[in-house]
Image 1 (cartoon, rainbow, N blue to C red):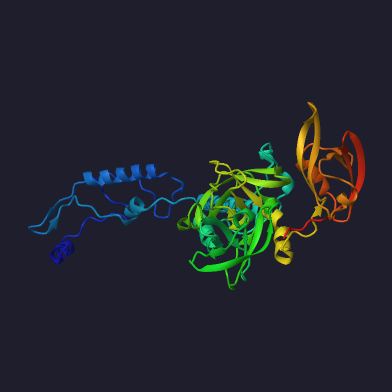
Image 2: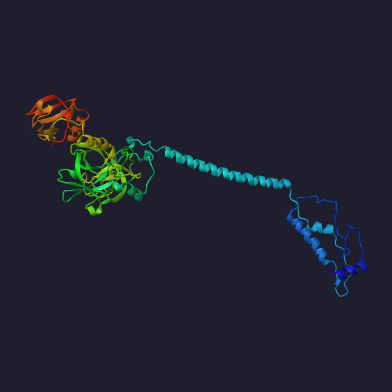
Length: 454
């Protein structure tokens, strides 16, 4: 109010009431004394609001007039009671125990959430570690033919990081070369050492008059055959160079049927050099006969075309696990083969050091296998050639004789005959039974070392 209003109050004092009373429509409120405490501290907000509203309604109904002209207040005016005001405006108190309970509950829930998160993360990390620890535990005995028990296949057991196809190409392709044979022949190969040794197929370079190796940088080198083994279809070339990028050789005993692979080579034309195709390992074939040789092969649906022969078959770690060969099955879509790298490793070493596969036993004959004789089932080898320098020639075996058993085992195929012979080493003695003009003969023959013909 203004100063004039305060002056009139001094001249005409109000009828004062006791300090603990105030007059609202001359009907006193049932108020508590100033020192009286609210008994129920846990009063609900709804009860408090109802009580507050009732007091306000009573205030609004109390006559109160003010004459601004003469700045006077009527005799029915009231004196504001501060204690009542405090009561109306006082906020309800909440139980201290309830607050502590709420805070404690929130803390426990928060800690529980953090604990569950940490536990879940820990279990995930442990599972990942288990998988990593399984690396290298692959067993080649798990590799079978198409009848493999896929449900028992272990995790991929190669070391290193799994690469994408572009990453594999970036890693391996600089080590893949094109091999130009004479004026028109073409094949693929891979650099296996920084000083210029190149691995390829024997059928790519055999009977060649000239050889050139072309790298991915289009650098051309003259090449010579360092060693060749037609039986396993492998050859080693040598170029005069240094600091070359070499491939990383993997472990074919850890191959899993269904794992991803890529092939890199030069199909059909030099202009298509370092073409990459991808697929999977379709099967791991054991004891496959190729000529008179029995070996294991990796079967894949990766495209392997003429010109790809001698190039690498690569796993998801950028490691060479096989040497591709289009000779084995020819141009059959969705059916390609590669020589497992583990079979080639000792042969590679021998070809580099000796030029041939050292220590391979030889009987010293050539022949043809037959399954019947005089219309009756009968397995035998018809001898077409006898090496005059061999021990079998010295023991009397001749061209036209029929070999019917080796070490008392009947002849089932030429491959079986060769496999039985190769169970022995150079210098060992084996028993040969044969027929000549209806008569049976038995001889013990010393195995000699097979060497390439000059």
